[in-house]
Each structure stands twice: as structure tokens, then as C-alpha cells.
Image 1: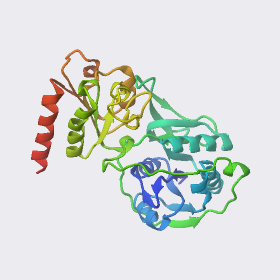
Image 2 (image 1 turned 120 degrees about the horizontal axis):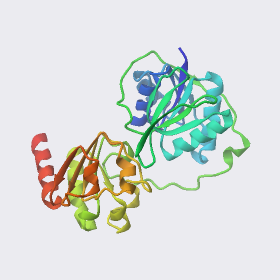
Image 3 (image 1 turned 90 degrees about the vertical axis):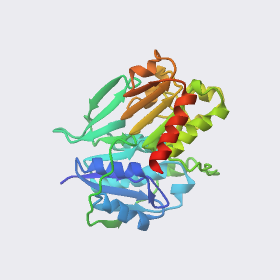
Image 4 (image 1 turned 135 degrees about the vertical axis):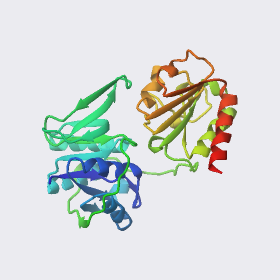
Length: 320
């Protein structure tokens, strides 16, 4: 069977959920070969094998941490040359898309970004994407070279498929451009204890109807009761009520959780573009003509200050 390269997104060997989703999708079109760059392969390898990686290609070098992106592209290109895969899958993070684009240029191939599904086709992998602010769904395939595909988080449920996996060392050299952009400092992001917004299975977002930064605690309490991430509309972010890093929308982050709850959000096209591919959408809004109700699976017409606390209480009661 043909092999599929999967770029491993991890933190010191702790494999992040989008990588497990990629391995699940990769098994549809071939045997996954994981590419693990940086420290922690001993911790990562069993997890990767548990999810179907028949091989783990690994390399660790100071350049991966000291310089931006290009050293990882050099390593992934070496893995590509060694494997000659049927496709290369990467997570649709900022870094993943840049690595994928640079790799596609080097190998003379096409790239598809932000796919929400990947399946085998007669002429190579076929992807599904949500385009034009999620107003259309397209099916696409790369017509030249080896497909390079970045996949949105939460596009597939990770499925275990244990295999015997070998860890192999990648041997390669860094190119002249690898040291072009040096990292001069890092500031750890303050942890909230909540899931990463783009990877969360449940997202609770607040909008203009929250009517103030101090009222976002209502949104946070519901999110915490569900184990969810917190999002915000552009109106809420522009008003200074919540950090821009939590903005969901065309000029913010795109999410595709299993459950998206929009409280006090009217449903402008800018916001819809960032959450329209969510599996189940619930809205709370006191305006029964709000555009968000055209999109939802379940809608509650009511004051969020009455509805959301009741929902939080019900969730806590059922859990406790």
C-alpha cells in the first residue's frame, strides 16, 4: 500500500489532537508515516503507533527551535524524498500552512488548505472544503505532483488503529535559508485551563449582546461547565470586552467544533465565516429575526442573561 506523510504537531513529545485526526484520515488513502521533529519522540512514538503510524521518521536539532519554519521544511522535504508518499498531510495551523506551502513549492506540487475531509479517489486524494465564507462546499484534488493538504482541527474523530511501528532517524542537511529568521525570545501564553479555541470540541461564544467585559463571566461559566473554549464575535473584541486571540470569524479564527453555542451574536457574515462548519450550532438571542437563526440547529429566543445561567445550572446539575 502507498504511504502518506503526516506532520506531527506536538509539544515536547505530547502529541496534539489534530495530529491524531490526520492519522485517521491518512489511513483512508495509505499507510501513515509520521514525521516527528524536535524533542520527545520516545513519548510520542507509542501514541503515533496506537493511531496507525507504521513508521515514525524523527530528527532533533537546535535549528527547529532557534529559527522559524524553514528548518522544518528542510526536514519534511528529506522525509518526502525518502518516502515518495501519495500525499502529505499537515494541520491547518498558521505554521502548518506555511510549512505545507513551502514544501509544495519545493516539490512542484499543488496545495489544498483548510480541508474538512479527505478521502481516496481514482486520481488521488479528494478533499472537501468550505469556501466563500462557508457559503459553498467544494470537492477538490491536486492535479499536479504529490498533494500537500492541510486539514482543519475537528474534521475527523481520532480512531485508534494499533500497529507495530519503527522509529527511524532522518538524515539531512539544513539549507542556507534555514537561518534566515532567528527566534530572539518567547513568552509563554497564560493558561486559562480551557481547550485551545481552534481545537476544542465545544465552543461557547459571546457577542454584542453580552454588553460588557464584566458580563463575559456568564459565557465563561457556561464554557467551564461544558469543558469548552471561549470565543467572541468581532463586535465584542472591537469593544475591548474580550481578547482578539479569541475572535471567531473571517478576520479571526476559524473553528469547527462538534458543538458551537452563540450567545448574543447576531450572525453577521463575518462571524458565520468562522464557525459555519460546526457540526451542531445553538444560538441564544432575544431578536427572533437575527440572521444567526437561519444557520442554527437549535435556537432559543430569549435574554441571554436569563437563558445562559439556567443552561449552566442545568449542565452542572446533570454532571453532578
